[in-house]
Structure formats: C-alpha cells, structure tokens
Length: 125
Image 1 (spheres, rainbow, N blue to C red):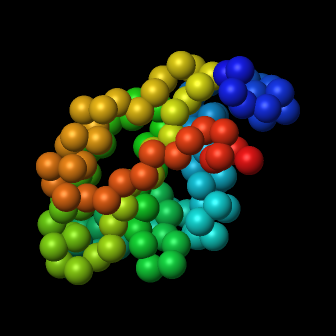
Image 2 (image 1 turned 90 degrees about the vertical axis):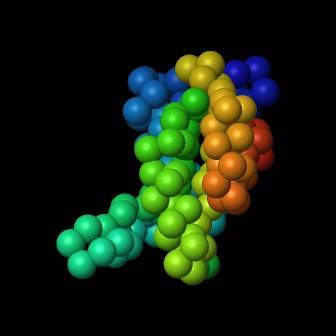
Image 3 (image 1 turned 90 degrees about the horizontal axis):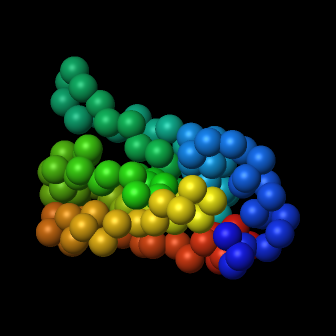
C-alpha cells in the first residue's frame, strides 16, 4: 500500500471488500484500454462467453489479486484457435494483500494465452 499515492490508497481502502476493489479495478482497466465492459461472445448456437472488456478488437479477461485463471482458460484457448484475439490482464490487490499468483501465469503460458500483469502504481496513475 505504501507504493500507491495516498489518494488512491484511501480510495481503494474506502471501497471496503475485495469485490468493491475488483469492480473499481475493472472499470479502471476499461478506461485505460478505452474499452467496453461485459461483452458477450457466441461460443455455439446455444451458449456464449462473457468477457470483462473488449478494446481495439481484443477480448480481455480481467483478474484481480490472486483470482484463479482456470475458470475459462481452456475455452479461451479454443476460442483463440478459432481466431479470436484474447488476453488476460492482471493486477495485484495491494489493500487486501492478494497478489497475482505465478502458477496462474504458468497456466496462461501453457495455453499460449497472452497476458499482462499491471504494475499497481502505473495502473492507478
């Protein structure tokens, strides 16, 4: 928390729980990427996948703190193989002391899904 500016740290702390901080972070990322949130992509005639953000033709799955990447990674690899441009963006939860887990990055690497870990100070600047 000491790395964040006092205004940002106070703002994140005032949001309360991790869910509030995660939603604020998702909105921050959408703003940073100049994208829209909650984008549905058809998987089959009867099913779809909801991505957190779409920006510049890239579908983004956002993970906050140590959120697990395994929920959709297999499906995302299949969608990527069908030509969709998919990335995962991750940022640490410094208030809750929940950091991006290296095993999650290893999973994304295994499935050849591009990812970016944001430096929290740059992310919130």
